[in-house]
Image 1: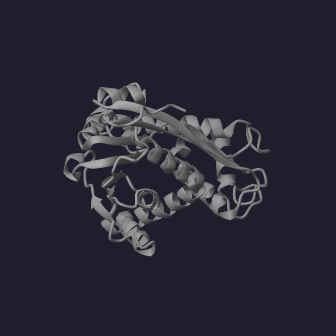
Image 2: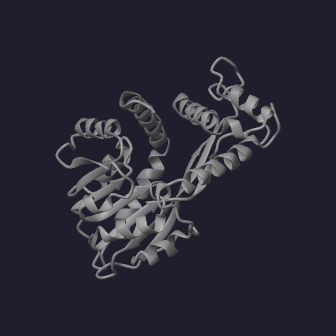
Image 3: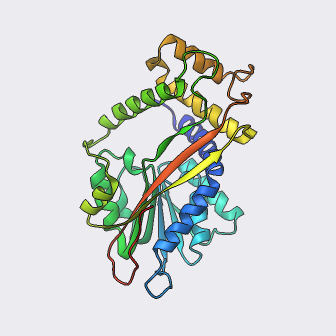
Length: 301
């Protein structure tokens, strides 16, 4: 079993990786926040007052602080399972002059939403899918919404693409096989979660079954053509390294050898030096309201 110190080191490394990811997606995240603000517009042209926001699975706080910028009158609560990650949130909030409005709450066990208090807006990115019973998690989050509040879950979308089909080594189509192996590993992990329940991941329908009124689904794209900057390359290097550690034993020897070449820092075939590396991703956000009163209908697209 890992020691608490070792776990903190792992969480700290994860925080750095997630910060790089957020920087890659910064324009798309800003567009997402603008869309959420528009969804909260009232029929008279104003906006629903937002006094308290929950950021579920906040990570190092990049989106937490973006939520604070978007809703300047609100208290923002970053919720995560790692004390080390939440310390990053606090440091980021201090650096951005938001320490008086950005607070943190440690969630020691999955699904501890009842202890978080009520909120006008709840944001969760790839958090619900890590709960054993996703529909129960949505019902719990819905129960924390104040009247007229908005729940936004960033789930599904398209897996990132960052390599051509044929990269000049190994069999063509490596990335598709990596995605398939990663999806199989994720499915096995989900099966082992406490209270794991199978569900069709039709998010608008799931939100409706949670007692909410779906108010719009929209995808936000990040498109970074080659040649990539070093920050994006470092992010991809970490992503591929973690994939190797997680699913390497699921790959055939040829694919494993190709993946090793991609994470090799000392070869021109590695992701850090390849001129053909790019980055294309789509994140899909599903939203739902606790009621329609005084609010314009949401929209899809």
